Length: 115
Image (cartoon, rainbow, N blue to C red; front, top):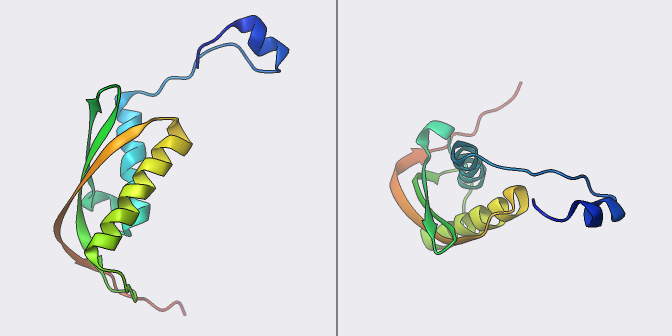
């Protein structure tokens, strides 16, 4: 966040800057993918790169089957792509232009009962 200190003071803002390391952005993307795909962190692979000033994110994730899912893989991929784009914009203020998703393996989710 950059800008004129006087203008920020007039609007009630605080002078300074906010930065995200590449590792922080990568970990954030992993968390977003984990939540959206419904798999464990250890099953998620994410690579970030630059694409004309915006982010390009390559995701490797297993297909999560079970739990009453009714959507097909194309719909799941679209939802995952949208979750990554929206999550990175909302949480880190980053413009993500491309999200490549590669499904690698299958994870079956088991429903457990709580007693």
